[in-house]
Every structure is written in C-alpha cells, then in structure tokens.
Amino acid sequence: MSLPDVVVSVVDPGMGFSTGTSKTQVKMGVSSSGTQNSAVVVYSPSQARLAFGVGPLVDALVRLLEGPGGPVVAVRTTGMSGRITAVTRANGSAGPLLTLSGIPLNDYSLAIQITKTGDIASGRFRMSYDGGITWQSDALISPEYAIVDLGVTITFPPGAYVAVGTDGVYGETYTFQVYVGAAFAAGANDVAHALDAAKLASLPWGLVHVVGSIDPTGAASVTKTIAAAVQTKLAAFYVGNSIFARGLVDCANDADADILAAFDGENHDRVAVAAATVWIQDPVKGQIQRPFGHVLMAMLGAKPPGLDAGQVRMFRGYSAALPTDIASIASADTAGLDAARFSVPRTILGKGGYWVTRCPLFGSATSDYKLLQYGQVIDEVCRAVRGVLLERLNSGVLLTKNGTIDPGEAFAIEQVCNRAGDDAVVGTGDATAVSTLVDRSAVIATGAALSVQVGVQPLGYLSRILATVSLVAKLPEVA
Image (cartoon, rainbow, N blue to C red):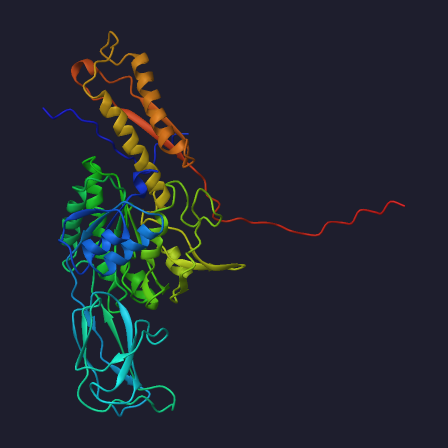
C-alpha cells in the first residue's frame, strides 16, 4: 500500500476548461570560491562576493540582487577550465612580447598599453578590461603583474618598452581575451548534481538560471545537452511533486546558424534558452560583454508570473525595456532566433534603447507551454492547489449510499481549490479564471483515489496589433 499523498498532474494540451515562488531563482555557474554543488541562500551582493568570490555566477547574482532583489539560491558548479588567447601586438613592435598564465576567473577583452618608455622598474603601463575603450590607472612595469580578481598573471620580459608607437601618439598596445569556461564540464551529470543540491535549499524556488560564458569557441550543441538535462531534472521534480519550476539556459556564444541547427527539433516545455550577448557599462571596468541571459534573468526577477517578458509598457513594476547600463547588443538574427523559440534582445522602431523580444519555452507544437508566463502561472496554481489538498489528506468525508463522495463535500473541495487558485493567480492579475471539478463517481468507500481537475484560463497577449488609419471625407462647412 502506498503512502497517502496528493499528486498533481498537468495535462498538456489542456482540458479545455472555460509573487510567488515562480520568481524566486536558482543560479548555477562557475566562480572562484565556494563549495561546489552546495546550495547557499544569498540575500545581498556583499554576501554573494564573500561566499563565491568572482566569476560569472557572482556577476549574475549581483545583477539580480542589485536590481529586483533576492533572496536567491546559488550553486557553484564544476567547469572553471579557462582559456587565454594569443597576445596580439599593435601600434609598434619594438618592445618585448608579453606572456600570460593562469586560469581566468571571468570573461574579458584585455589590453595593455605602454604609457612611459623604459624597461622593467622604469617603464609604465595601463590596463583595460574592455579592449582599450576604458583604461585603468597606470602602474610600474615589473617582471610579473597579477590581475588578482581575474586569476591571470602578465609576465613582462626584460627589454625596452616604447610609449610612443607608430601612430606617434599612443604606446605599444597588447591585446588578448580571457574566458572562464563552460558552466558544466561534464554535462548532464553536473546539471543533475547541481539541481539536487538546489532541491535541498531552505528557500522554495521556481526559476533556474544556468549561467554561461561568452567564449566564442563554445558550442551550441553543448548548450542543447545542458538544456535537455535541465528539462529532464525539472520534469522529474514535477513528477515527484516536490518542485514546480522552469529554467533558462545561457546559450553558447556560437554562430546563429549553428545555434539554430543544434536546437532544431528540440522540445522542452520547462526550459527557455537565451541567445546573443550584450555590452554592459560597468562603472569601473568599462564596457564588458556578458550573455544576454544575465540581464534577462535579473529582469524576470521583477516580472509577475502572468506578464509577458516582452511587455513594452511599465505595468506592475515590469517592462521589457533593458536597463540603461546596456550599451549595445551583439549582432544577431533576432527575427530568426525568436522564430526558433530563443529569448533574444531587440530594438523597436520609434522607441529608444533595447528590449526583450519575448521569453519562449521550447514547448512542442501541441504544447500549451510555448511562453514562460504560461509555465509560471500553472506552476503557481500547482503549488497552491497541492497545498490546500494536502490539508484534506486523510480527512474523513461524507459518502453517498453508493460509496461515492457526498456532493456537498465535493462542492466544498472545489470551492477551496478555486479560492486557492484565485489567490495565487487570478486576484493578482496573472490569469483570467480558475475552475475546479471533483469527480463524483469514484467509489471512495473501496479506497478509490479522489480525482480533482483544475482548469486555468490564462490571460491573452497582444503580440500583434493591426491599426488602419485613413483620411475621411470632409464634412461640408455650415454657412
């Protein structure tokens, strides 16, 4: 005999019936410190930095916590492999060629420029985190210069460094890129371990963010594997009725064509994928490139469950307008990626700045869950209905002479579920209606399970508006 329980099942497509936990996030990614595969509830940016040091995970945490706020569940994953590109020299070739070592802790386009001619201990240089757009204060050239917050050491070989290059103005300049590596080195197994850790967190959550890197050698096929693993694990949580959640994965910084090819035919009703990268204006480091998912997930922390992520007007504290620190968005086939169900940034003719297009899920053609808000609304109702039905578990009920549930008892349960649904999504403006039907034919007297069907009528969304404007005949003037 199985243990008494309340089992919630979502029918997709639906049955045709005419802030919550869904906004609370789990962020999983690489960082310089912290215990791997251990969930930490984070409440502030300072706590995030103290617990996890630096890296993509910390960047994503801080962006959320400095914006909509927390708390948020954080899980440090394996996978900080790191990569440093070859050093490119520009504006001269007289000085020695720099060398680099270490395992990068984040993604940056670094530049070193000589500001005072001289050798080691007499020459000076300055450094840029954004490829030469914004420069830090200069420093004395020494045999080694450690970029502490990046995990990279620059070695200056002996020799004369030149402060006036071939353009006659600026010194010799050395450029190179550093990348932190993928969020998950071992793919599906890492995802499972990280989500199992998040499941044990003391804070209920409903939205997972797999934090990615901008390394252009990243493959969309790897992202596809990660997305499938997140779908598998979240679906297992749902079947076990422990967690009702959706996820968003930062896509690898791959070519659009390769992204489209990798995800062709993929169907994941619990997972969204954010493509493209954005340039963020950092007050210290200048313009830094990050996955669009970092920005989108911080915005989703403010989005009520039933609102479309692409909603233009500011309503209930949310708008699709990207924050003003977004300096630019990387070139991408927005229309093509959006049509292929990717979350991407966009411009809107006649409106300044940058915007979220929408946040699609990778639901199949027949799925009701093609947009994140549908999943978030149904997850809220699942939590609410399961909560009130658990209160009825093992409760005695009146029966008819046939052993079925008494109609009055059935009606009372329907009203309880309707009120729970109304409180969760209707009263908040996230859905149109919730209706419940209790099966009155089950013979409870012989141990049959009570079947309760809950239908949710979602909001409609104005994704296209066609306006017809014309001149009308002028009315005759009155003398």
